[in-house]
Length: 163
Image 1 (cartoon, rainbow, N blue to C red):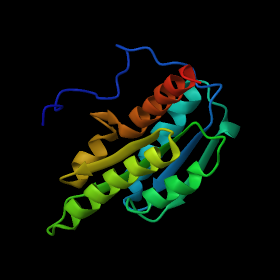
Image 2 (cartoon, rainbow, N blue to C red; image 1 turned 90 degrees about the vertical axis):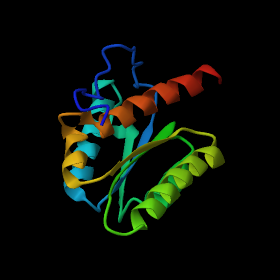
Image 3 (spheres, rainbow, N blue to C red; image 1 turned 45 degrees about the vertical axis):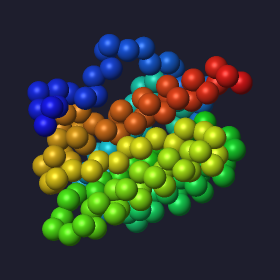
Image 4 (cartoon, rainbow, N blue to C red; image 1 turned 30 degrees about the horizontal axis):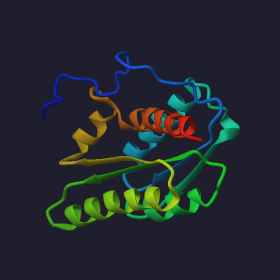
């Protein structure tokens, strides 16, 4: 793994705009709850850190990563949201189920963003094992939820530049 010595959630090299003028949705999968709960905490805390008001964050929970697609689409029906963050975790098993789910989720989330012409952020871990997931959910490699929230803020700010 190329990231074995790196915290991927270090944003000291870039400027992150404040999010106080934006509204965000977070859809989180309950499957692999230990991991997704940590991703959610990372995302929520990052939004607050960058001055997004609690009242401007709408959160929903869905069953698994595959259901993130429908959850994001439903959140996007709220025209006041500037971006939606999708958080989930798919861990490799012994069957090809992993490949089908990861492909469907990635494509589905991208399609929701295209359908609504707003940012829909892919904060889904696709790991070989539980330890890799924990390392990316607040462990030694940072928190993918935090990264997803920062991406959402940056994309919302970028989109607002073109209004």
